[in-house]
Amino acid sequence: MTTNIRYRTFLIRPFVTANANGRFSASAVITDPSDEERTVGVDGDFGQRQEAVDRAVEVAMAHIDQRHIASDHHMRG
Image: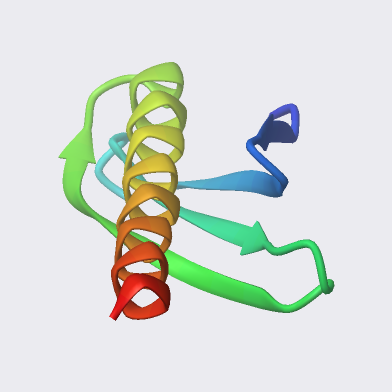
C-alpha cells in the first residue's frame, strides 16, 4: 500500500499499476489546498513497485514546483 505524501500545501497520492509483463506504471493525483485534483502521468516502465512510487512522487513534486514558479512570476508581473 502506498502512503499519501504532503508536499508544501498539497497532498500527493501515487498510484502504481502492475502490467501484464510484471513491470509497473505510475501516476499521481495532486490535491491542492482548495481540494481541486489533478492527475499527472509518469513516463516509464519500472521493474519494481517502489521505483514507480518514487518516480510518481518526484514528478508530482516537480509539477507543483513548476506551478508555483509560474504563479509567482504572474503575480510579480
